[in-house]
Image (tube, rainbow, N blue to C red; front, top):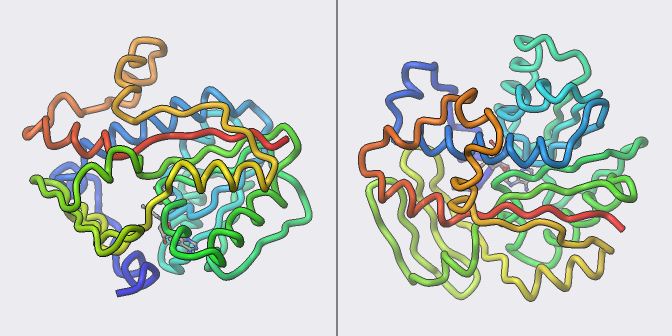
Length: 261
Ligand SMILES: C[S@@+](CC[C@H](N)C(=O)[O-])C[C@H]1O[C@@H](n2cnc3c(N)ncnc32)[C@H](O)[C@@H]1O
């Protein structure tokens, strides 16, 4: 199944169903990490470009930061409809979402953005040079000089420790050096591609981007008392059964921020 079919077929769960889902506590923690980093780099009045925006799950985080505009793109037409719906329900006027396969289409908008956000998606583009070039050119051509690119993706140093892995929430199997098949309970079931540090460094240099922040998702936990966001967002990770399994999965991801020079 292609990534597009996979995300198109995912239906929207209601609040009660989400609470019963195995990934509920994981999403709650991941959402807090994203909000924490958005708070570090975005400011009131900023324009946000959300690439691979999914169902617009980050809309409320941006609304709370009082940003001026949100434009999002995603491969899944179903997710784009849900994102537009969510923006209407949240009464966010300056939010627009469009369907696009960013691995083969370069987007060049007429205005530049303060923040480009690519959450849990950059790794899909590391399938080949063509896809990598397209996403990096889209990022670079739409970000202001001095703007920030906030990205979360699998931490290669951690994921590559196992050729195959399985716990009660997630499993993966490396198919070759660059590709692994990844399953995350009721959320993900498709091939993903590794982002090695050397290739990332070369891309940053080529596109005049500077790595200004890097942290494994697990290491954010020690920051939980630095703002009231952890309590405010009712992060439920400590309520999870199979707690160790959750922390194993959390540890697979890292957050990076690049500055456009
Ligand atoms: C794990 S979801 C993350 C969604 C959202 N960013 C979030 O944090 O909730 C990955 C998203 O990347 C999108 N995606 C994957 N490949 C893509 C591509 N080539 N072009 C645009 N979107 C893509 C998928 O459709 C999916 O919505």
